[in-house]
Image (cartoon, rainbow, N blue to C red):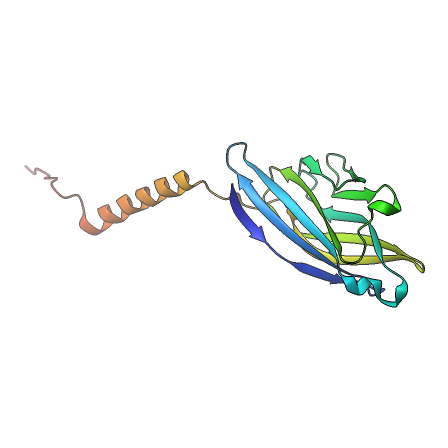
Length: 179
């Protein structure tokens, strides 16, 4: 598998909710799929004032034709995804499974679509209600180009070298007879 991209983002929200989303994308040329993983972190600052923000919902936008499979969820979380849907969402089943300040959790899936810019949302519960975080991450996108396999790159390179050689040196050893 080849590492395609990695990007770390933090999303300040309207109610001062800050989370970290660190995506990792790998490409497996065998089946031709991308594996997307998201490390969602709730920083200790979200416990300030004695009213901790407990993340109970995380969602990533995806292209409608993303064809997600192999959904990865932390213990106590359930994925929500329907083929053709523009997002995949995970929900904590109960308070003990939320992501508390200072903790993190892994989410993921596979898709035949390559990575592109996508949005994410997270919801956190505290004594004051629900807080929202919005941000940008990497997710399956229409029009994203696949990472070429190394053998394809080698063949393309050899073909280009051959064309450049013919253009530079002509056809050495070829004699054209004229009458």
